[in-house]
Image (tube, rainbow, N blue to C red; front, side):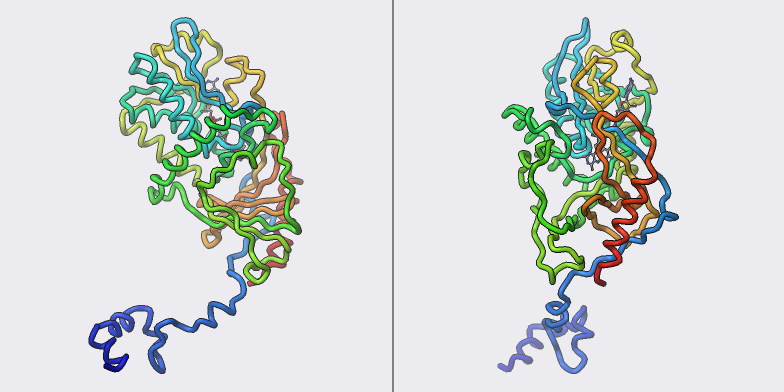
Length: 381
Ligand SMILES: Cc1cc2nc3c(=O)[nH]c(=O)nc-3n(C[C@H](O)[C@H](O)[C@H](O)COP(=O)(O)OP(=O)(O)OC[C@H]3O[C@@H](n4cnc5c(N)ncnc54)[C@H](O)[C@@H]3O)c2cc1C
């Protein structure tokens, strides 16, 4: 049987013609397309950012709640109350929220009580409250502020579980094991949220540099590597559009912060959870709550109430540009980075240790716009 007759008999030709094969069939069937079209492209074209100062729609400074020995997840007794701490996630609070929330939930399970007071309504508090509720607890959130007026709203919002999570010289096998447990739990949980109202996306992330960076971070990110997400791959010069010698790429998760927090908080309330605006000024205020078990997710707010000297802020500024829906990647280069979310393009790059100042510095923003403009101007495509 001739090859063409075989295809006709099997009905395959019809299937190909009926779909994207149609245009390729002008002048005879080309089942595999024009391979030169793909091979000779030389690089993956990616859309450019529109960068100019007049596109900046907001600037913010958020305070990462950093502890040198990492997030505090532990149980303590305070008079007649049991306190379960869950705070101090540094630059990793979004990423680790479900994982340390699960660890806090396990500590709550060691008590006989079913009613829980949860302090704080940032990403850590909302995740922990959700998990407790899923285990049958009656949860009331007591908080000074709700989103968008929380530090969690001022984050870039990417999977970065080892970003400023603890000091490198403080890492012990126990810290590492707890981190790993939290990281694995969070990662799994986040995959379950894919496709839900676009609260989490996967996208490409580039690092575009003149030369390979040194691995000497103070915060131990190189110690904490689990290989859960796809790893960095170095791109050959012909395979990327940038005019730099060292370009690496991986896939990473992006959290669409406003819709993410709203989605989970709404679900918590639909399932009967309560939220009360109720600032805590002192330990006496905690003692006065009706619940016997208190879960503390107050982030940096825990410092004053629990006198935690180890907790301090690492500030981070972001500048938000008008959203560009066609741009869906994240990029870091020397002196600047950007991440694209549904609500805007966020430029950033600062990490000021022990700084409580939340006033944006316009010069930093202008510098990022200029660095990224130069990069975009040189970019092919
Ligand atoms: C610029 C920047 C970029 C970041 N990027 C990322 C990232 O890409 N990925 C990532 O994983 N993490 C990132 N982070 C870190 C992340 O944002 C934090 O770790 C996280 O937001 C901490 O969450 P939280 O819920 O503990 O704290 P918060 O969001 O601060 O929530 C604390 C809650 O406690 C309440 N509270 C505080 N004090 C009191 C009180 N006295 N009484 C009652 N309630 C109180 C507050 O009102 C609030 O509701 C970034 C942070 C910054 C600043």
